[in-house]
Image (cartoon, rainbow, N blue to C red; front, side, top):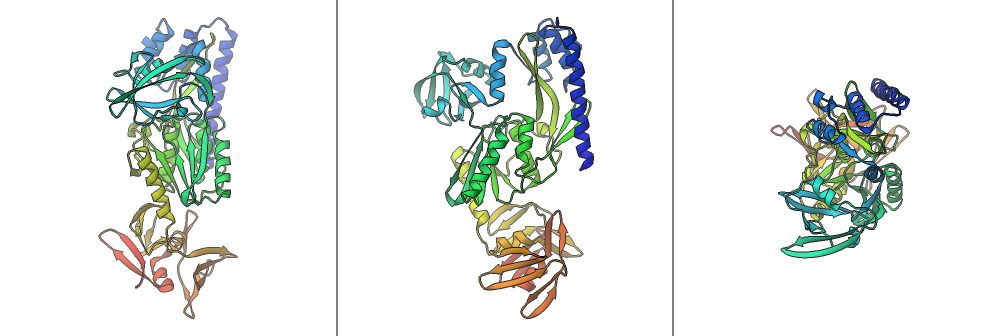
Length: 492
């Protein structure tokens, strides 16, 4: 762990020193224009070294066009547009407030942004946007559509959209609005719902408040909604990941000449079952979040394949008031998966449609908390069957000397037992049944007999041999050799 921490500190320090040297040199020569400054930034920081033709470009627009052959995320913002871009990055927007994607040349609305003019309109997911102020949108790229929809405060936009074969018209007056970074409420069955719209400056603090408030209101499980989340700031998502996964690397970064990782933040251990909702517009930092959850395996990802962007961009101010954005690093997941090459996150449970995704998450969490009469564990796998429900677990069962070892607490609580730890002893309770297991001596008492079992602790989890559940609790234990699985169930 200390080696990893040292690595990231060295990386960040080197970046800071290099940036300081470069900006000091620029400050010494106040005559540098945007083009010259942009070339210097690319030379020193770009993950994709600029070719000679890029450095010979005679306009910044040409420079962006040429560098865009290898870095599709490079952008230049003039003075007028840079402030708008910065506000959006920090959670402030101007416009109608819609999420959309281009499918087969058609502009499909994926949802509306809370607090925006569109949120108060009749627009729905699945509506097809046909035109904006008379400009036909079919056949345009996503970036071209974004330009057609752009406007300042007070701008009047009239759109025509299609739903179920009928056309409708809606007019908006653009206004500035703050993104509701974290929205939350309590659903039926004590399921806490948290929607993270973007990873911006205040997302971590708002998430902390949401988690505390939902727990106080009795939440027993959580839905984390990352659908239509375009990403945001690396430091912000890094802070948030720590609320859901154990300590360790949140994700790895590979810069032009160095590598490192971001450690998870200091959060209480997540002890509630949770599901994460994603869709095709879950991108960038939001995909990093989902990848960490998937790698650890203590939550489940539900939805459709995500956007597929695992590259880090930095924003640089230019002398003439504009801004320059380009790729400075590649990001790998906690388990060092290449998300960019993989093309995004493949969900654990694939479900199309917003309402069906939400219902699937609710069903999953309700079933997670249900007490079952049988559990099937697959050796060295993070999947199990609780009753007939596929469940994703972080404690992989394993074998030692021909004996199968199963996670103690998850098994007992899954079978409806109450498990309490006090002064080195584990109290296992169900109805009128009580048994005490001494974790030090590994002894327990059942049917007037003092018996002994093996306890193996691994990664902070206690495991017991399958024979314990038969001898101590009267369960039927069946080894399924063709599946390399152990089935536990109460005897008839």
